[in-house]
Image 1 (tube, rainbow, N blue to C red):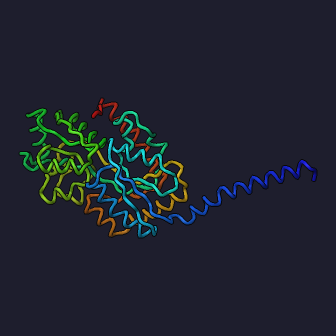
Image 2 (cartoon, one colour; image 1 turned 135 degrees about the horizontal axis):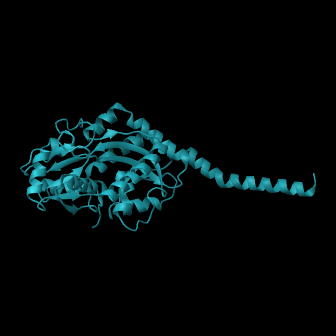
Image 3 (cartoon, rainbow, N blue to C red; image 1 turned 180 degrees about the vertical axis):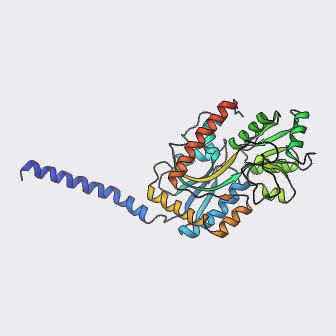
Length: 328
């Protein structure tokens, strides 16, 4: 063996040693994950279906993963503040975020985003899939969808809907386009769905397109006129679908899911995804989510990535074709 060969071999050994020094702590960190509490960002105000969902599932995750899941509400700027916080967090699996399908709508609803909704995040797991209901204040003299459409058309600009984000905004504007109504938008993006529901119950606004409203309807505080999807909701069996109520092709759904920062190691992503899949498969969890008007929705991180890309393209087409504009 000549001197050059010996030097090259020694150089390779030093490189391998250096790599071991660098990556050994990372490998250990992944193997014993999690070994401290997980921070779960909610980019909305407290209250509403998102908080209820994560309070429940966070407890289940803590039991399965052996570490607390600490919820942190970071509302503002149509969820951008909390989402940007996640994008800038360390990709170590200890900061994650609850999100909805409205996440992939942000490029079309919010200008000058400080992040890319696809590239800057790692999909971890979907949680639920739910239908949107049109709910109105019970004092409105309309008991069916048809009656509400006729009333709104007879009194244009007199009816106001609450908007808690891109999905509810898109649903309402689709409704206006398909029915010829002119429901007026009242933005609540920085306050969250709970604020919309409070004002709707109080009569300050008249309508809201939203998921997870079954408790308000069953308690008689709101009236549901129709619900999206192919079939009726088990939580609201007496509420017709939009197709049954005479408005076919009106389709808006929302999913909830968990995101991590881009670059989060796959073993950690798979660990959390697998934990959530086990939790969501539990009969008692399915039953509890149905009580929240939510259907369990289990998928792999890869399938979640595909869903996000497909929904982003679908929303872009709807917004462009319908010439829907979003503003404050």
